[in-house]
Length: 246
Image (cartoon, rainbow, N blue to C red):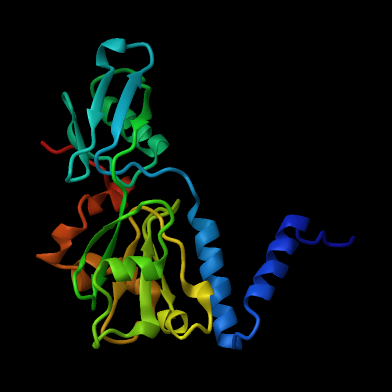
């Protein structure tokens, strides 16, 4: 029995990628393929942002319905369950989190989150940049534009090992290494990755070999106080760890 090949749209995407990679070294081609896979796997569902106005509707119990605005710390408040992270979650994830927390008080609660109005959305540029900060997204924002928005890189930055951290649709954030030096030289503009809200761009001083370890230790070794205050609502990167603030 013959094995079915990839679907036509996947073949077309692969051929288009190969055309874009013309002139790249084998190492660069491998990195570009990894980046494209990273972007595809991360998903494109809307992530709730700071300042978003949300309507929360409870099926069968309209007395609990309310409209809230996501605060600058990335959280919202509810009677009985207190403060919970909202920024960085999809509406479906936040709906499930609210329902789970209310299950302590109600029988089979079913909450639905609706984004009524979007607030500002940002990415966070950290590490060896002139001005570590949140960079607001206005339309399309690429890696190079975000770094420029943070004042550019410093002379101590390792530009062949720029780390992009994304929460995406995974259980926890993932990171991938980007050869930003190839963007600056004009060799491979494919490394100038389009960013999503809540992405973290980090320029290290030295080459980082293991992207997984970097993501796991992001807030213990790399982005620590006082700079972690810039990444407002970063605890929303860990939606499975949502708990009520007593």
